[in-house]
View 1 (cartoon, rainbow, N blue to C red):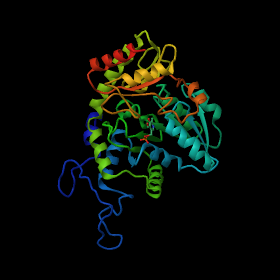
View 2: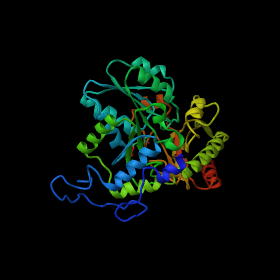
View 3: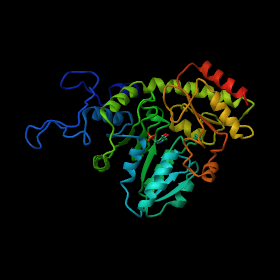
View 4: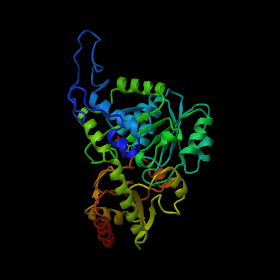
Length: 381
Ligand code: PLP
C-alpha cells in the first residue's frame, strides 16, 4: 500500500460492533468480563483501549513498523524508552535537540545513574569517539530542533549495528511523510504526535513505533506499568489528523521553501537555517533521506539584537507567537527564551541558539499572507 493510502486505511477496519467507519471514541475505563479473565480483548483502559489501538495500528502502518504505542505526550514516550535502561548505561544524544528532551535526560534520568553524552552528530565521527561497552542507545533527532541540522541516519545506524547499541530517531520534524527511519534500520521511531501527526494544535501526545516483537513487548510492559497513556478522545483526534498528513505536509513544504527563500533575500536577516538550501552543510543527506525539506525554518538577525527579535515576534500577525509546531497554523517562537530555555546559555549558543534566533513553523495558509506578515514585522527593526 502506498503511503497516501496508508495514512487513511493503514491498520484500520470498520468498528466490529456497529460498522462505524471511524473508530468510536471508547470513553470507558473498563470492560465487562463474563468470568474472571474472560473478555473481548480489553480489560482496563491503561492497558488497552480500542480507540487507542486503532491509532497505534495506524502509527505502525505509516512508519513501516509492526507495533505502535501511543503515550500522553512526546516526553512520556521518550521517558518509556529511557526506562529500558539500567543504572550505569550510557546514551549518546544529538547536542542540538528539543530542550525538554535535554531536560528529561540531564535532570531526571541522570539522577538514576544513566550517563548522557551530547555530541554534534552532523559529523558522525563525533559519535564513535564516545561509544564504549556501556553505550546502549544512540538518540538522534533529525532535522534538529531548532537549527535544522541533518543527521545521516544510515551512517549512524551502521555505527549502532557495529557496536550493538539501539538507535532511536525522533521523527517529529520530518514525519513519516518525509522520512522513515525504520526503513534505514533504526530500532525505535519516536514522535511528539502533538505536532504534525495531530496537525491541528489541539492535542498533546507521544508515540513510539518498532518492528521487533521483543522490543515492542518490553515497551508495552513499560507503557502499562508506568501508565503514561493517552485518552480515547485524543487518540481519535490524532487518528483523524493522520488521515490528512500527506496533503498537509506537501503544503508545509511548499510554504516552508517560499519563506526560507524570502528570508534569505532580506537585508535585515542574518542566517537562514533550512535543509533545502544547496549550501546547507548536509543538504545532500537531506535530499537522499527525506522526500522534501519540511516546514520548519529558523533565522537570525543581522547584529543579533535580542530586542529586535522580540519586536518582530510581537508584531507578526499571521504567525502566532506560541510554543509548539506542526499545526495547520503558522507559529513563531524564540528558542532561547521559550522552547530551549531549559538548556544552559553556553551549551545553547554553541549549537547556534543565539539571542536573535527565531524559529518558524510554517503553516498551510496562503503563501502571500505569510510573506507579507514577515515583511511588515521586519520593517519595524
Ligand atoms: N521532540 C521534539 C522534536 C519536540 O519538538 C517536542 C516538543 O516540542 C518533543 C519531542 C516533546 O513532545 P511533547 O511536547 O509532546 O511532550
